Image (cartoon, rainbow, N blue to C red; front, side, top):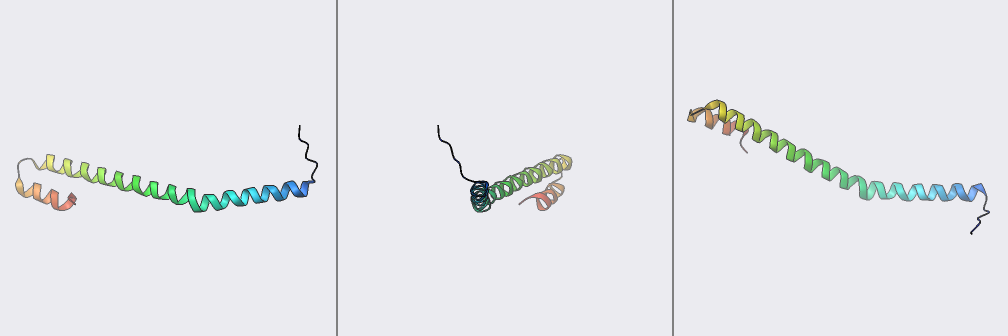
Length: 77
């Protein structure tokens, strides 16, 4: 059994160093990775939404080539 008899100042300093290390890792590794993943997901959802709007527009256009061309101009990439 290990008994540490250091004072509370040493414990508090150790806690501050641990929190500091965590914050550095969070802001340099975790947060940028999370932000990149969120941007990729939002971009994918936007593309799916745009594709759904294009499909709905083409379905509503029926056989009219002018309306289909307008749909592709509005929602196409």
